[in-house]
Image (cartoon, one colour):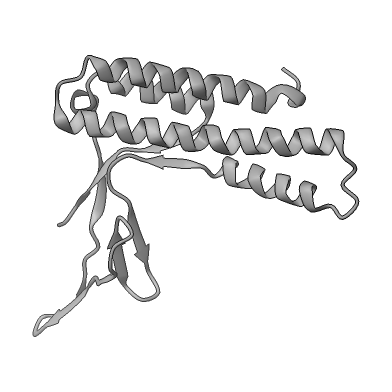
Length: 161
């Protein structure tokens, strides 16, 4: 497939996967998995919107002369954002090694340092991926999205040691 049609192909693939997740959600009865389905549907909708923005900018460049280069600049930025696009279904963990702080799901920063008479200890939480058994019928769909659409999907929970 030529590069001219890459984003059209991505749009079709993402829309197809969104429909598959919507259909799969109908057969789901577990509340936790329903929430994961909803977050994945929302994430795919965001990816679709980003691809639609890219194709609109490409169309604008094909029709119009972009003398100032603004549309080309926007297109380049959108393409970079899409290349880094990621869907987080459960927990997100940020660690700042310089300040020894961490935060979960964009919340408040917490110190990982603790001190007592035995010395200083640094203890960060970690992420633990959900198993295929925990994901049920959503597991093969997520694997397919990762491989066919190239979208990063994180399905991990924060574990405190």
